[in-house]
Length: 130
Image (tube, rainbow, N blue to C red; front, side, top):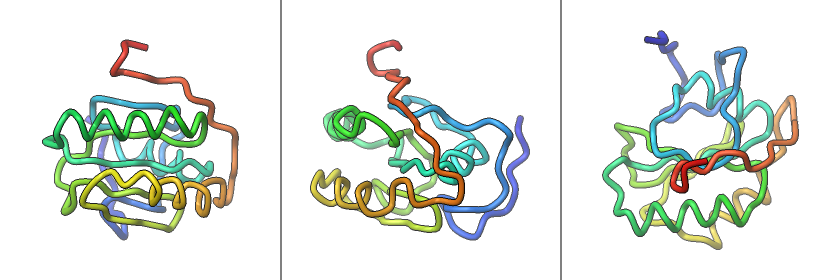
């Protein structure tokens, strides 16, 4: 088990992070927060969602990840206070449903606006086994 440091928000938007980061794409399992924070520091946007979210809504989120083509990842996160919470470096936006125009605007405004911006091509699609 990876020890979890204390963060200033839940989900975290900055703070301690691991040497590795999460690759961009859609995940069906939770990702340790210390990997997500490193991804945020590299300019990625994370779409966190409650594991109990309806499969159709998860599919909508995964479609948004693919549509963005880079710089976005989505994963379930147990314990969220809202069904969906989008994060970027030092930014957080809770949502009640996958609102595509709002997600697109958040990614446009806050993606690649972090201290160590790096390219993050779409690499992971656990929904389709890759």
